[in-house]
Length: 126
Image 1 (tube, rainbow, N blue to C red):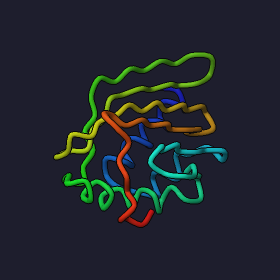
Image 2: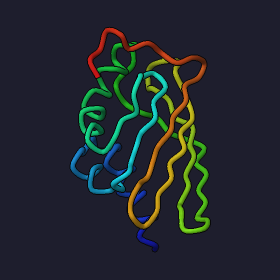
Image 3: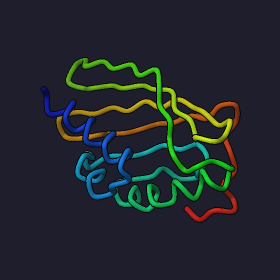
Image 4: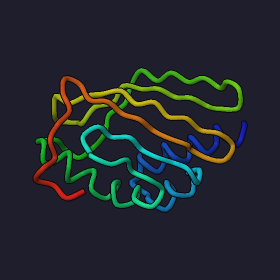
């Protein structure tokens, strides 16, 4: 198994277990997380705080705080491992799409979208 696939699996495991240290150890130095519900991109310096706020954000929408995932697509092309999946906030109608790009240096980015619309988290600190 290639290093990039191992790093992407580590990143997924970190989200599954809410382990910010494991998450950060899977990231490339130039990592960013693009969440359209936020004004600024999340970086390697702010991802642990973002993860810690995730459950509160989902609960503010009436959800359980957990993430569901299905319909995964994976491609290892030209030195990058690209994954796409459809995700949801358990207990809500909010769903979305996410794409992640990982190289042997770590996860470079994750970009998410929301469906049917981007929620407002104005009442929750992020």
